[in-house]
Length: 555
Image (cartoon, rainbow, N blue to C red):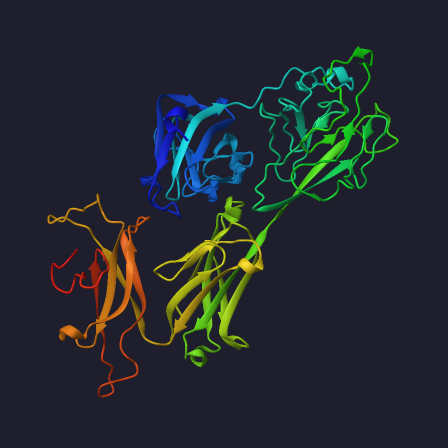
């Protein structure tokens, strides 16, 4: 992608901010001098290009767009920490794959706004919740396509638009085809042949397509989240057998049009070439060879083999999108050798779901609590919580509430997508489809007296000002302990870790968890001898290159 050639602006960050807590530090701004009154417009359209590996998926719900009025205080769009929602976007660009330009069209009347927003826009701010490089271009306010002059309802074929297909002999976008809606608001198909169909909405095209036309219809849907299917109805009855008047149409090998998986209806039929005139009008049509287009299409004619060639055709296509789901498993296990001490003990977890379906579907979900009890099973001692039927792509965060008499020793997670654990004992990730890939978070507890050590690396000059430039990609930390801190050679290494340059706003921070306060296997006069811990640092991690065992001994 040539950013200069394409005249795009670049938004870029090297830090992650998954909760959008630090949005104020991440916004990119497009500003202009004269306010635009957006009351006259229906859409805001722009193009997006994400740099990166083409196998990655960038959810549109992590992108935020904000329109600011000329007071500089009120905005419209992604308020608070919200990203773009499926209800904001015209079309189905809900997942952005790197290396491809996407056009995003926001419906202005669907965007949230501050109470005092005055519609006089002077700037747009954009950003994303993750460390990415995103190019943006062609920000354009536009109105809904204007309806062309109509001649009234007529079945005369020469009065019905052909959208240029008769002259070209090829499929053409049905631009500006007029439709009505059961929601009460009619509209027209846009210049790209697209229209929006909401859940439970039925749109009707009256006298907009000529009989015998090939109609290519495609639902733009996220097939990672939904399992789509379609059914064709004639006179409100599902078409379970594909026929037609053999004098005007030939059938293919498609047996039924009911409950077919996919997004592109296809009846396999081919329209025959008509004569030289129809209804007293000469036919000027490049469709001179009876050949079905390569795309999946429906022939706009009755599926009855007894239908009259000029019979009024009433077809309906119903799209059904079944949400793909997965599950989250939360497991509580005792530390090795402590199974009986934790048997029959209950543990409570807090689960927060967000970004439902990877598209911020529905309303925000309150956190929930679930409790499990450790019991003996054939494969060991554990307690387990299973939450099923979660839409694929939904993000989650799981944390354990403190339980008297035990301490959280470790947290691990497997399965799911983008799963990880935090230093303070939480597990997070996203749901994937299928039991075999279920996200499983395991929390291990112990009755031993443990604690954690949090370490923060600060980069400062001698005058205590912060160093921000030319920092290394990583440093190394080594945790050591001893029972006799005054004895130089008594320190023993507990753990060594690599501390990478942070990609979030928490700084150079890590945590050593599940540390013993003392050796429980031995006492002196019935009392334990407490450990002393220290942390050393190194730029290389090599033996002999560790610092921090005396004052001012740093990297």
